[in-house]
Amino acid sequence: MMTLQQIYNHLDKISPFELQEKWDNSGLIVGDMAREVSQIVVSLDIDFTMIEEAKEGTLFVVHHPLIFGKLTQLDFAKYPSNLLEKMILKKQSCIALHTNFDQTHLNKYVFEKILGFKPEGQNPFLCTTKGEWNYKALLSLIKEKLNLPTLKVVGKKEKITSIALCTGAGASLMNEVEADCFLTGDIKYHDAMKAMSEDLMMVDIGHYESEKFFSEILIDELKVLPILAIIAHSKNPFHTETY
Image: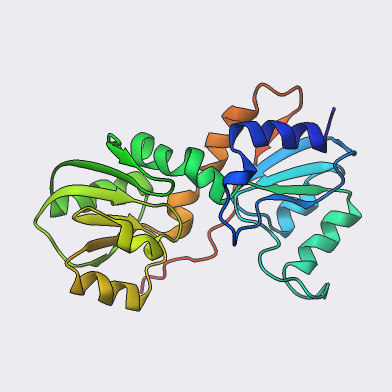
């Protein structure tokens, strides 16, 4: 058994919470630092099924903070209070590793280990590389490696000589991108219009699809701890309908 504080300290060493963005809420979400943890469950997000299936005293280590923004009331019929109530009743706890983990682990892992690109430049949230890719070949690679049935693409360049990536929703970083093609998720309409006007090709690689590797990365970092750590696979809230 370990205390929540001991596990928190370990997580802080591998991905310092102080690196998180000012608007973020990484760190302790639910729990008492002095309490003992029975097991660790690692997941991109947390849902009802996970809470119900996990035993009392479980610590959930997630990527997306369950409490995000101003929480002014605990209405147990609404999200996230409905999940928080069930967790509290089972003395479960939650820690989030969000924008700090993007910087220390997630972006580089997806760029290098999943897509097979060699990082040649990196700022806190952007990985970049140079080379030569054919339009169709690049899209085929992305679809295969990220298991995407379809791709939304802004602009079209038959010859691509540089690529940048930010997992999750990174379109706000567009002004920092110095590449022919920018891979990120949750690309909005007006972001697409801006990209077109500035001759930046963008490929929407999905929020869930680009961040689903969080658990497999983190579980390796937890193997040194004297406590059981397992992965729970959260569900993508979106699905594709074909008629």
